Length: 130
Image (cartoon, rainbow, N blue to C red):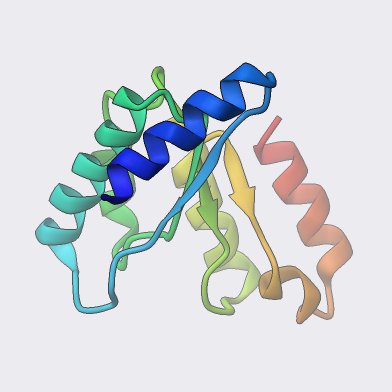
């Protein structure tokens, strides 16, 4: 039912020249190899339905980021959500890995708003995502 609805939204948006962003989130209990397998299937489904962009959560392990994105980023723009509050070094490592693996960027919230050194972090994120 959700896939039918999504395909209808994509078709209608296309008629108006509007891009479609899908936010895909798996439950917190889906981790490791299961997370990689499930999120890849969902990303592929979004590609096949002609979705323009997808926002997903970072996997629990930074090493899973390249495996999640492998072979998909030429077909769809993937953005990562900011997630839980990290220190700047952790945040930068996640973004560096994501962008070098093909992600188009990040959608950051609390890692910026709750950061006392947000200015430098914003500049670094901007440079990484160029």
